[in-house]
Length: 544
Image 1 (cartoon, one colour):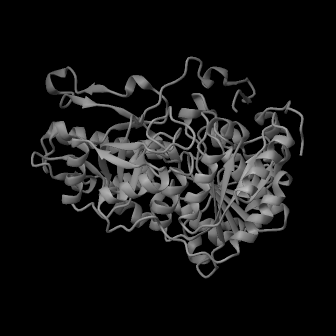
Image 2 (cartoon, rainbow, N blue to C red; image 1 turned 45 degrees about the vertical axis):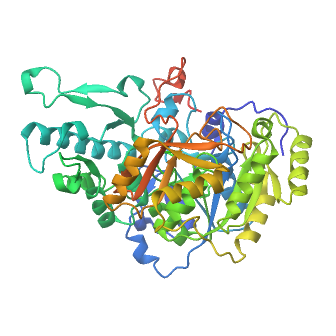
Image 3 (cartoon, rainbow, N blue to C red; image 1 turned 135 degrees about the horizontal axis):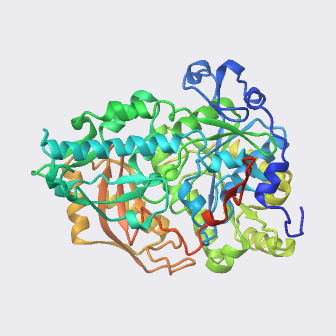
């Protein structure tokens, strides 16, 4: 493993890499040139018809990469996911990686891109971090088509009736723009500009259309789920759906190409499916179910990840995505870092490790070594974890690529090949309140849950409307096990306060709100966009 601080940026490393043509990458997983739809030399779409061709192929082993409670800078979960896929390839395994598409919001904001880092990147990184194949733009357009139809429906006074004060569908944009969080539409024009009402924007990653795209099994399922979207309510507080408005077919048409997974490659040539990008708080924070299922048919080991720490990402991966897709994860990797342990303590790692075990999934810790960490510091962490009965390996995927963590790859193969009886945390026939309480007390370590009066009304309304058997998706700060971002570590004797709940009927889950959750981020004082540029030859700089 390299110990010196890296002198090359992610972009410099990416530019020095020699990419293989996409048909060569496809051939590694048994695909012929006619099986793929090329988007240039290095990107391709994979048609859903491949499911028919590979129907009789056994599924590979599904490996989830998650993390301890992160710091604000993140702990290298995506880099570990990509590095582990490369490490599996390095030890002779047929590996496929499946991850989310980056949003332009963080890319131009503060976090930068989301294609890994150093020698564990997905390429071509400029395309992936910017427009890619247009999937996110298609989601934006489909979402805003429904918004346009809603306002036209109000203006034309069409049936079924919609109460303008009970519209629950905001517009979206794939950009951080705080000025659009709360707006008024229909101003001026003496009624010609539509019905005046309060409105707002969310970032596209927060769109229910994005969550639907990521949980659909095929185009038929996608269209049906889009039809179940609740646009608003009538005067009797009865839901009015996208199907009631007759627009779900057009929305599905806009997503016809976006539903197909995108095939790219790592810096070492391991195949990667990059597809979908839902928020990890008000949605489930995973790549598409279609991409995961396809990867399982094409590889013997599939490495994927879930957003934020394991209390949010892993729980939703297990309780929502795996339940919806009838997936059985074979192993989990818990990423920890020296800096996150300095903030949260070893106890935080122990709780996350124990929580993953509650789903009957075997887990190993990856101690992600940053360039300014010493090997002695990482070894000390490993010894402390071993004393706590936790298996761990030190990885250095950013600086060394796949060879920076072959030990972890060997361990993952060993535990993935053991039999496990995966089980979700709760049963769907439990009440919404019972499901929330189970997650809060079991996963977060809360002593109880307090439901505000408005939250109780929301839950009662949802159960009366027939949504009580949905899984719950708790929107909570990623900075703490609690709902207080300023409470790090491994807190106890705290109460989770539920402030509201709403249904994502098309996605098929209940969003439960705790604390203040922002669905349209703002830009920092000096956003990353100010460092991004392109020269006269079209070479992009400033991405990271």
